[in-house]
Length: 336
Image (cartoon, rainbow, N blue to C red):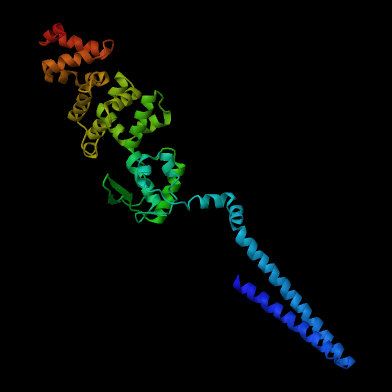
């Protein structure tokens, strides 16, 4: 501002000097037409230059005043376009309780933060969002990596945070995958979706299909040797597993068990665990291949509870009760 006023003052001084010289010349009665004409031309030339400079200075001064007074309005006009609105929305200050908000955020909300570069405790916000997605919603990003997934472990007074240790190129690939894949979840993620849908009384067919093709579920079917088809259905088996709970299912179908050769012992242990959870289908499935084992190995109390759990109209139930009636354990039926 001082520069413009200084320039304006300089031009004004030049104009005043020219006019003063002209007045002095006239007052002193300068003689000679040729000399007077030449002096007049010089004066006119200087006046034109001064006028042009004065106009430029005035225009610049007006622009400076306008930009100073109305700068906020100009900024508003510039941020109204869509791209600039999206950019300006990321300029805001990160809330102090951002970690608590992330922990309580929905999966859809976390997806919107996967391109957020702002730093939170030395790490990009997008890494925190992806870490929460993996821990809370069991998002599976392994298909997008060429190496085992590792984590950066950060501790707060309330909990431990796991941030995926991946580079920018991998992160870009993961973002594209999560935004296009409908169900980018691990086995536990699908289990929890099934639990949610069963509680709501409406199971998505696509989710059910994917759940029934999980490695853990396929392992169960291999244990049963087709018993689920003979005595019930795959859908009924899935319902029984969901009702039995997440911890039981994944403990029985852990990687160690899945890598062990299939045996009668594994099948019996699996179904007996669900019988102990009072699942009628598990009791019925035991009768398909292991009726003799139940009859001879169960204690009296276990056998009595087992019989009470069986669906009475099932073919395998009637056949088993007939075997019990013809055995030395007939008394259990009489007591029941």
